[in-house]
Image 1 (cartoon, rainbow, N blue to C red):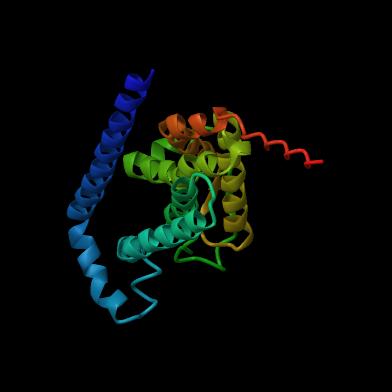
Image 2 (image 1 turned 135 degrees about the vertical axis):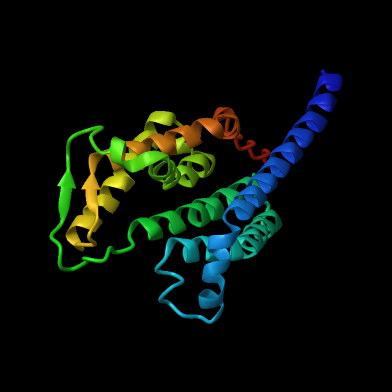
Length: 234
């Protein structure tokens, strides 16, 4: 028993190092592929101008990459504060909270960007399932899968009540319905499509499956029972 426990700890540590390395390589690959469009937005973003930076997808992606060290610093500060207070799973909870916000806000921001006819063109709705998939293309489908992927990946790690793939699927669908409704109400010159809801929810569920080994272990851990207070001495 002791030998297996001593062997499992280095294996988990090595697995964490491998996953971290793969994540860094993935981010580096994305930055390398998108380096040219990002550099086109860099002068405008560095000058602090809204137009041409935060109202473009390249600008939002660039600022997301620039904010990565700040997100890591926020997760470290939260974890340190929790560890000082003696909280359990300080790092996991802190990473989950920062990851949900950092990985979701940029995609929702890009989804809510107004089109050229915003405020003029009336809202459009597409309620026929799977009809818009043919016009989305691989990039559109991939982007919709990523909108709530971070929420689906980290939410069950942070909230035990969401530690279930069907619940994450429902959460992704509910959040997507709110985004599509806002697009229609605000007349952003975008099509509020049921296919967007389906793909966004599927992306959240797939991300939840990817992090299942972490949130399932947390959910299956029995809560610590309070120790009975010692009887007062006579």
